[in-house]
Length: 100
Image (cartoon, rainbow, N blue to C red; front, side, top):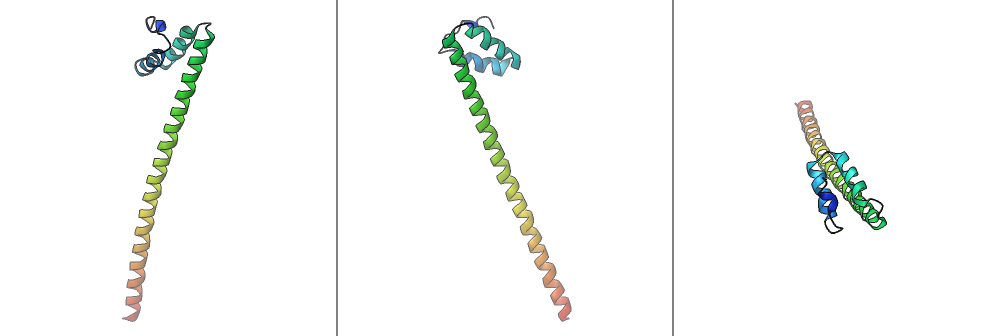
């Protein structure tokens, strides 16, 4: 972790990804605090990266939700079509029985 803090601005995004992937979530926050220190430019960089991560996270959730919605809507459509087909068969049998 100490070595990661020495990253320059071009490396910080990769460091954050490494921490996110291989460390507990609280370490990312600790890294951000120590890496930026009192440097306003570094604080802005961390802020930008956090916003990018949030936007990416939100878009992934939205995409997943839309995909689930489409899948469930399709499943409901198939069930309803099966119900209509079965209902139509029952009506046909019922009409046939009435004729006989």
